[in-house]
Amino acid sequence: MTASLLAACITLQAKEVNVSDDLAPEAATGFEEKSLVKASKHMVVAAHPLAVKAGDEVLRKGGSAADAAIAVQLVLNLVEPQSSGIGGGAFTLYFDAQKNTLTTLDGRETAPSEATPTLFQDDNGKPLKFYDAVVGGRSVGTPGTVKLLEDLHQRYGKRPWSELFQPAIKLAEEGFTVSPRLASLIAKDQKRLSRYPNTRQYFFDEKGQPLQAGAVLKNPEFAKTLRLIASRGSKAFYEGQLADRIVKTVREAKGNPGLLSKKDLRNYQIKERTPVCSGYRQYSVCGMGPPSSGATTVGQILGILQSYDLASLGPVNPESWRLFAGASRLAFADRARYLADSDFVPVPVQGLLDNQYLADRAQLLQSSDQALKTVSAGTPVWQHASIQADDQSIELPSTSHISIVDAQGNALSMTTTIENGFGSRLMVGGFLLNNEMTDFSFASHNNGTPIANRVEPGKRPRSSMAPTIVMNKEGQPYMVIGSPGGSRIISYVAKTLVAHIDWGMDIQEAIALPHKLNPFGVYELEQDTEAERLKPELEKLGYPVKVRELNSGLHGIVITEEGLEGGADPRREGVAIGI
Ligand code: GLY
Image (cartoon, rainbow, N blue to C red; front, side, top):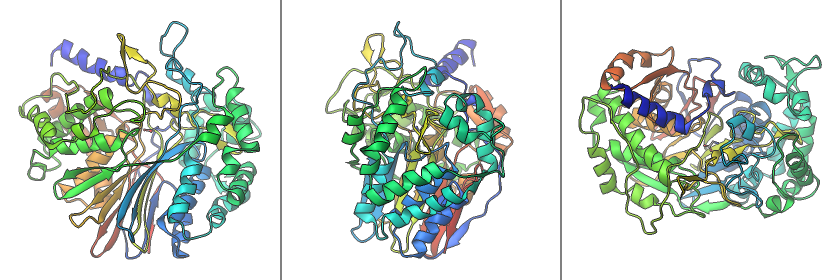
């Protein structure tokens, strides 16, 4: 590779993530071998054993997948507070077995009505440094999770709403054990976590030391918040005293106040979106459309790979990974140009997933002796064309994923987040508030051309979250999968689908398969795994290569004729439980 090509690749990468995500608080804390879990009736897979246990208990009482997800989410908020919770947002896919329908619900945070495209720029129009924007009130969007849980319950719930809050209330009052992962993340983020008194008080002990693994942590304030929502529903969150406290916390955040108002909270709405499905081999891979880029970009990667016989090539052949990288880079170039909240900008989802368009893009990967030299957005068929510039977003690893199948065959795939690890670092009512607004592009224009994912009032920031349900030829759910990981979510999910569908790995093996990702030009190989062995071959093809932690949190279930098979990511603390 020439020096100028190498520089061009690095510039492209730097443009997307201009802060070292080695500093991000969501780094790995180890790798724990896990085995495939089999069940015949129901299954829950999520990021913490206590949360999974709560979901399993709901299912044992005859609850639906939606009921179980509510219990899981509330416990996750408590025991994995850095990743998701009622101060954030989520996307959910729900397959209703009785009605035979797949529904996608958008509980994404929205930009406050006072926000403008220059929210993350200084007085000279220069984008702020990432953490200067994140920590404080400026990054907080109107949370969606409580309304989403309530919506799920109204549509699909079988157990009483308040019952689903009991596991989290009990743990918050009696205390839970701080896990090694949480302790290590608190230690890494000490400086930012100590900026605001409520947050400092919660995550540090009486001597001012960060909480250690094994410490028992109680959260009576969160228990109080949960009791309120359990008895009065989402109104108790979006209106009244709790809403007032949220608004005050955001608007009075020292050094970096935000714009969230009571009106923003009162007006928040869940949006039912059309599922985005694309064919891959004999399956239909369905997920969340805009404002998430998840399903569209996963669908594009798979759609480009469809032209190649990955099954014959196999998982060890560098050619498979050249194709995976090429498909990812082409899909991510389109994502940077076109993907944003489709309520605000036209997004050519159909054109981007059109078979002929993807077959044409796949032609660009025909030369098998080198990495793509240049990658730019394509020109899909578009009903409503507009001129847009490539965006400049910073997306660090974060978030959590829940997969559930219940005894009736209902399936739920939910990816949930407060964005960066520990969100905005603002805490109120015992929970952390999100920093989801920093998922917008900090720059609003590029040389005068508007960026689709710029901040606008009431808009939802583009997400990478890719909760997925794969449907079989009979139109029934076959696989439930998703992951945290910022923009890497898309590659993690696509890799796992290829490993299972093309290479025949069971769901646990597919999740554990070492990551090799290349959405932006630099090949990232998972450190301390066999992925590192590919380094010389990939460098020979012309890729700059970086060996690093790749901390996915993939949680998946495969539904076979013999029963359910579940896999939890060995890179995190999650488990699969089923009966
Ligand atoms: N904040 C993570 C995502 O939405 O992609």
